[in-house]
Amino acid sequence: MISQTPAVGEPSAARSLDRVPLDVEAVERSLRPFGQGRLLPREAYTSADVLSWEQRNFFEGGWTCLGRSSIVGEPGDQRAEAVGRGGVFLVRAQDGTVRAFANACRHRGHELLPCGADAVNRPIVLCPYHAWSYRLDGTLRKAPGFDHVAGFDVEEFGLVELPCTEWHGLVFVDASGGAGPFADHVAGLEPIVGPYELERLVTKGRHDYVVTANWKVLIENYQECYHCPVIHPELCAASPPRSGENYHNAAGAWVGGWMDIREGYETMSLDGHTGAQPLRGLDERRQRIVDYVGIFPNVLVSLHPDYVMTHVLTPLAADRTRVVCEWHFAPEDADRPDFDPSFAVDFWDVTNRQDWLACESVQRGLSSPRAITGPMSPEEDGVHQFVTMVAAGYVGRPVRPQPAAVPTA
Ligand code: FES
Ligand SMILES: [Fe+2]
View 1 (cartoon, rainbow, N blue to C red):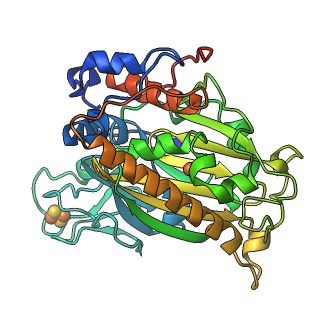
View 2 (cartoon, rainbow, N blue to C red):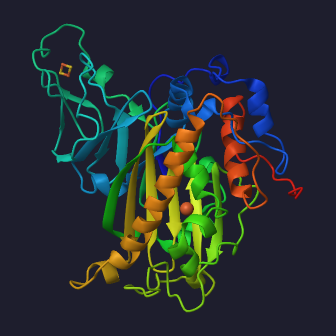
View 3 (cartoon, rainbow, N blue to C red):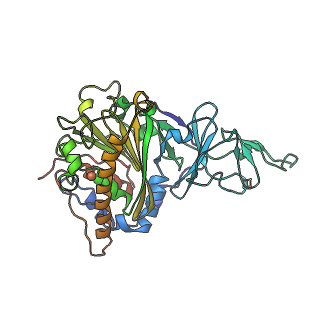
């Protein structure tokens, strides 16, 4: 499933030279075994300097998800997205592969497209400043006025290519060019995500949220259901909040677990009914559970018997995060003229908003200089895994969940 385009350009700066602006002792407390550890220090959620470090080292320094690969679905489709400090330019080449480049023209550096703008479809890449043009594979096609300039070699001025891969219909880019193989990033995830065939599903619902909370507050919230009995009556009706288990010792940079669907419910919906068929090929067990997987740093994949939901997070500030939530269905259902995705969209919109309110309150609480973060409950082993993964990255170790220990509770 993984075809990765190679890196071209400068290697990324050595991480060891870039120290996270946090109290190292406090970070070490977050690395303790489950039952003994603490959440990340308050400043990890509130400091602009810490976010800036994370942008350089996590979002730009590793594999980051840019969303569904259908954002550049057809050959010639082009768009740019902000990643870390800069922009990434995505293009679907004539051979059908997605390629990624630094979003900067090789002449004077103008952006090839504004980040976040709608996709365009063109047979070439055209810089809007002095009209240098590139082929869809990034090679320079024409630099106006340079035809007779002695020593000008078009081969020297192709776009700077970045490693990019499509994985089950999601696009991931390594904006640093130095993150290592994508397969290592998602090691162990194929048997969990693969059976749902996300790559063939059709997106039939999308909500864009801007949440006034740090991106890690949102992910920690996703990794536990300790809060479910308190704030999610609809979710608890559909899924027993203490059901299921988390995966442990993931080989890649991800955290996940599953929960059961309650008897009498066909799926996660407000009235228990589904408007879709079970996804083809799912075994009996998968038709009765939801798997929740968070792939570091910014995509959450929720695998239901009859649809897949994704959340893609983009930090806008230390206390603000854009979340694009989308719902994906089998084409057999999505292409029906009477298909109505609201059974899934409405359920999760209610639940998302309950979560955002809680996360925004956490952020306000943590904004007090007197706030001190605490321990994780025996039901928050998924949070512990995420926190240890972040803390490991902060101290220069590979970004992976640290080996789990038995809860002391
Ligand atoms: S900066 Fe792109 S053509 Fe001049
Ligand atoms: Fe929640």
